[in-house]
Length: 472
Image 1 (cartoon, rainbow, N blue to C red):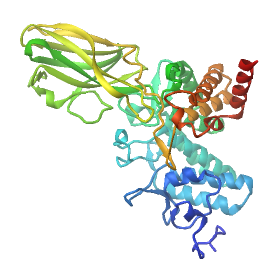
Image 2: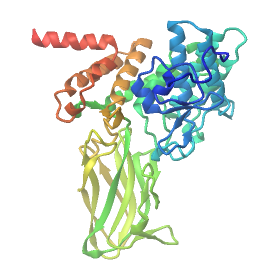
Image 3: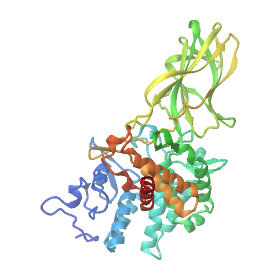
Image 4: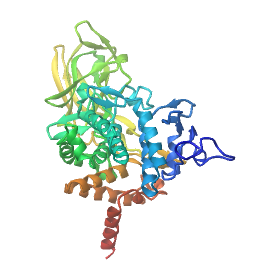
């Protein structure tokens, strides 16, 4: 027997964890986490207790969130049936994780590398969601271990990382209406909603810890911005919520009469104070760039079109005061320049608009003299910027929407923490959307799962009351 009180070697037959597809060293059985989720995560315990992910190609990835999932599992088991061995197992997992974190100033962070498995996350970064989970898990472990534990101080150092601005390599976006924290910080703000509300929900039980970390007003400032932006996440036409507020499109300039276009000083504008330069030649679509196949760079900083058209990738946002493409251009002879953009449709199995086609935004006059241009990009062409949540994730062969219910639960938890009526109102509205999915042509094929079970009981009662009122 190990010091945890469970067997370190398998008896005859397969262990409980083995039947769930868990490999590596033996650990206490995973009993509460849904078996479908366990199989989805593909846990592999390393020798030091770190729960890594065993990918389909056999490689091992040390996912920063996996220790949290396992520690919370053992905490929940311990709440039901107190057992020091479970606390010790959680401590082992967290200690293994702490060996892999690094300081950033006075803060501690768990970095994601470029191999995280998500193309838009193919750069070194840390995540506000992961950091907030460590704040809560370390604080809880500190309470369980009692006097003499250092985990409370470690928790504070994780909390401090949340206030580091993205401009300094952190996760915090400061805007006029408050502050936001990024699940995945990019060059341009995105504010993924499930990551944001989930992170804040993990922080709400620990106000004293936040104050000790110098973040006395941090939660309120986040709630201020969330309250201001929340209507922009709502997509009533699709009975859905947006995953985030930003997204990318292709835009192109097409000159008539085979005229060439000379282009310089291009930018993607969100407001007079938020203008993002358009570079050249990238395959990373969460950036602004001209397609390198279309232009030749000149020594004076001008880009000359190879033919009569220039394509650009732009990151647009619901955060924008007004999305626009601004540039300085001339043409090799007088011509009309069509400004076109790709616009698509919502597909529940896609993360970006599907069936895209080019539509004309505007036609401007091109001359031999350089001129300043500003092309406004507005609704309805931006309706799918900040793409609605999808049904792409598969659990035991069944496609499900995991993010919309997370939005609902997160808003409800934040409403319970601080009585902001808009959080409850939107949570109710979005719960109503779920109730309508079973009859919606876009979603009904995914409704073999009852999504209303994924929302808080009070909201399910609200649905029942609404249904009774309509029938009455």
